[in-house]
Length: 291
Image (cartoon, rainbow, N blue to C red; front, top):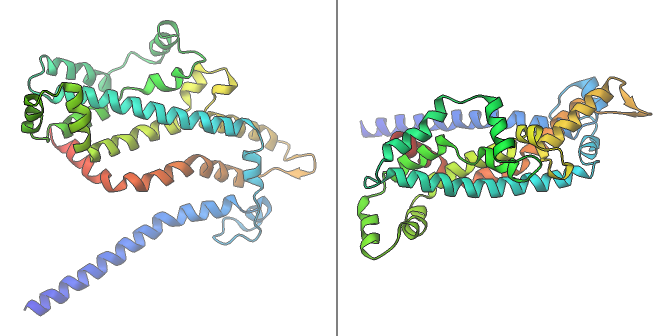
């Protein structure tokens, strides 16, 4: 019986491994295919369609993406916005989440409601825009790319729920040793909360990296334009050019250009994700279930 059970278990594991392999390949195939399209010539894509092995290789689409000097500057703006915004947002959301996770904090439920209401209701786009421009004076400033998305109620509550799983005896011991709340938070709570910090960092950095509406609404200075908005403007200009079909005697790529833009924008995020993936499941499960 034990041999039969062991054989059944082995067969079950082999089937699961096979299914997971097929699932992984199904996820990788579109990415590999679109990358191959991005390094194909427009002529081969037009004649033969999307192919895993291109008939004609060409980097013309990438050359057009990086042809303008503003793209490199936009990359720098986006990287700086993502780093600064993510760091500040983690500190603010983490500190607020830690404060309302403590039983000894007065009015913690009222403060929680203050952060919870914006998740359900909001005043609308126009009042938000007026506050950002008339009250906070964010137009044409680097802060316009960072401040509007600085506080995320979802990430705040996610971190609060995780902090509640940390035994209170740890913070009580720190208090007895004379540690102030800031020292306790940065020296004890943050090191013990690596999974939720990594998870929130991924969410926040993705939001900042993909954001372009703040630039559309607040930025007129070309030196402050982020990558996503810059590529959006390039794509809009390319659509106008496509109406004529060519620039002089040079055929302008359309389909290859679109997928090249895709890989230019998602490349850094793809490289970052493997470093936080091992913390992602634990952080999102504990932070979402406990509370």
